[in-house]
Length: 139
Image 1: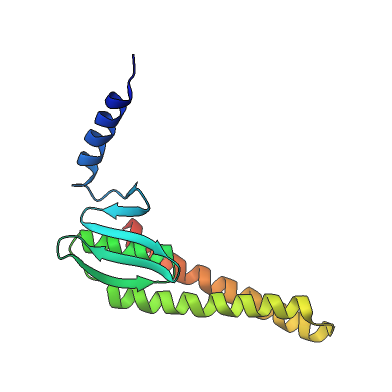
Image 2: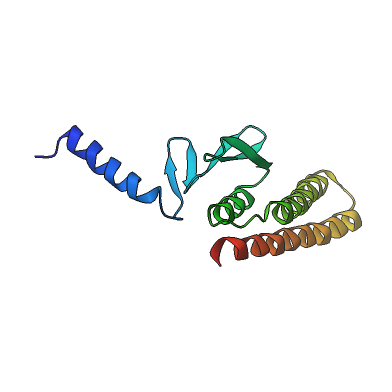
């Protein structure tokens, strides 16, 4: 017979084992990697260091937040480089939103073709930057 207390005890045992590993796990509204915590906020993702009880940085994208958190948990500080990637990805994201809106609203076929080409470039560049961030996560 499975009881609520038994399930809670099992969950507590599993979570206690995950706190010492570099495996990301969700707990409540946050993602934890060892002592580093990622929380979503209305303006992006906040990264906290639980050992020092301080906010490390705020990012716009979850990929950047996970890359920073994983490396901080391993003792490597890539914050500056990751923030550069985050800003670059934000620029390409904003470009893509702008071009997509322009394509939808324009009646000139020539302008539409140019903006579609620029939209493709913005999407490709954001994917390139994301793959660079993925290297920090998966290596």
